[in-house]
Structures are given as structure tokens and as C-alpha cells.
Length: 202
Image 1 (tube, rainbow, N blue to C red):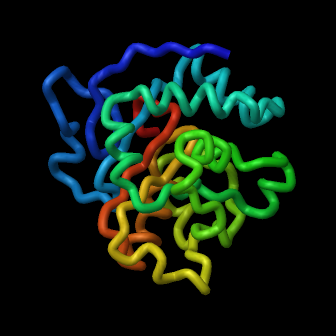
Image 2 (cartoon, rainbow, N blue to C red; image 1 turned 90 degrees about the vertical axis):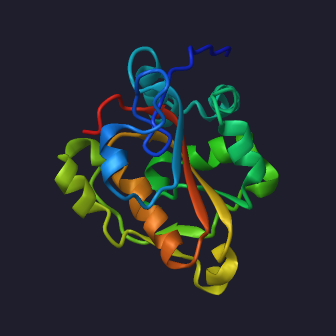
């Protein structure tokens, strides 16, 4: 599978589209974030949204390599991966992993940079309703205290530069909650890297 995408200007902190020459969107200029940066390869829109759904729910884990190649070609991604100490996939709950059979974020992370990927450091300790069915406020509440670090390796993120990998960023609630968990453990810098970004933070 060959994928091609036209890069667009995106906010450095939340990855929403911005005008050429802008580095931050209006919201990120005036508010704090648990993320230091956010990077995305494509918009979560046709044809990419359909590809993501097929990847996750129609058993196409082999597409991860092509998707990761497109992610690596997006602006600022290569430097983020090279400067990272750890690359952590967004974890699934045990229930969701059993249902799906694989963690799409882990496949993407391993395709991006396997030598830095840690599969079991960040844990999802609480199963939650799918984010897609919720409002923004409900999404933020939904993922509170949903993430934790593996207890025996809690110090592994202290002072580290971390890239969090996922397939899609919509509101950013899940990524922000995971980033807060890492921030509480002393992570020095956290970048979210996703394949697709919703053009509006629903």
C-alpha cells in the first residue's frame, strides 16, 4: 500500500490546522497543555478516516508500516523521534485489546522506531466508553485516572523526552491524560505523534 499526503501548517502544540506562518493556534496561545508538542501526518477526513477504521477494525495490521512511513514524512517528525528517549504507544484496556486482537498504536510505534519503543511502560488501568460517542467535556472526564505507569519502572520516565504515539487525535483528551501521568512522574518533554488529526477538536 502506497500513501501520499500534502503537508499543511499545523499548530505545534495541538496539531490543528493554522494559517501559513503561524506556529500556535489561538487556543494554545492562551492556555497551558500537558503536551509540549503534537504532530500529525494527515487530517481525519476522507480518505484517511476510512483507512484508519479499516486498519483498526477490519484486521489490517500490516498497514502499520505504510502509515508509519507517511507519519515520518510529516514536518518535524524525524527530529522528534531522533531526540526522543522513549516512544510509548497509547495503551488499550485489556477488554479492548481482547476485542481487537492488537494495539494499533503499538504497531505504529514499532514501525516508526522499534529500538525506542516501550510496549508495557504506560498502562491503561481503566476501561472507558469509546471517546467517539462523547462530547468534549465528557471525553475529558472519561479518561481521568485511566492511565498509570508500570509500578516497577516508575522512574524510567524521569527527565526523559517522550513521544506518545496513537492513530487518531480528536479532542486530545486521551493523549493529554496520558501525558499528565508521564508529567507527574517527571517526564521532561512530551510530544504526541498521530497518524490523523480531526480538523476540529470535538
